Image (cartoon, rainbow, N blue to C red):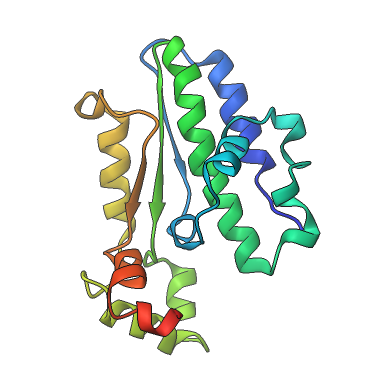
Length: 181
């Protein structure tokens, strides 16, 4: 099993080399990166700063260290968040900004299929036990992106915005916690 994070690392690096002063970027990550166990400062720094061409050689990303597809996905999303943070320093030297958004479950045609499929009860339970009590919408994600891409967000860079209706909070500190332990 492999962790697919190379493309985002290349994109951040290459766009960062040509971004103009005043430029801004937003990547989309996932709430999933926030839900995995803490990796520690050393591994976080490796994920953030290892040269792109060496990134896939990190011990933490080796197939024998990947538990399953969910773990691989979570690692990829955690890496994306950390790389955005590190790249924001480089982008800042060019007068540009970069941030990421980590949405939870967003109503899309694919999500609607999931809600009505075999995992439907899982999603309905999650929504019932998160503070917002519902999934998000594409417009809600776009609103955050708009903030980050405009002058209203001019002081925001290197940040990740978790917008999941409180599902991750419930996962760690609320009613979803008891279901995950």
